[in-house]
Length: 242
Image (tube, helix red, strand yellow):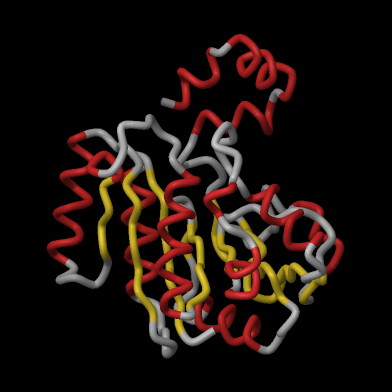
């Protein structure tokens, strides 16, 4: 892994996205890296704000407006992963997904990269997420019992702050991802384990996560699972996401 490609998929949630961008750009990163925001059909107003932020940053990050590439409605996580995989493989880079409701300390990105590099059997590496009080929060509540450790984790990861290593990127063609699915954290977590790789959860590199700030409709899954499945079954769920 010679470099790091950092990506943030976003649809609206402009305030938290700006904080995520600022945190990444303020990070102390020594490995060669590039940072790309994938704008997945944000409103014209929010797209304009992202373009202004890009221009003010003087090229410190790239902005890809997916509306220029596809007419498929949001979410387009499969397309994002496919584009990121192509670029990362060409650069022998890992992909670090940082979602638009996450911020981190200045050393978190470099630490996760360094720790992952030391583990040649790693498919996925993720930082545990915490709230403003430093308490481990959704989706990693199960990790509270493990303390300040690095865990060879049998459970699936969320892509809040997760590194996909070249080992995994070379083994799975993201063009084969099920287009009927919206998110692929469970899919790729399980695929990594089936391939015999290990997924490491770093409880010692916490990042701040404000769950579902970027996708408020997902709160319903956490708070009322029965309602979530009813909305999904009736089709109202998909309309809400768009």
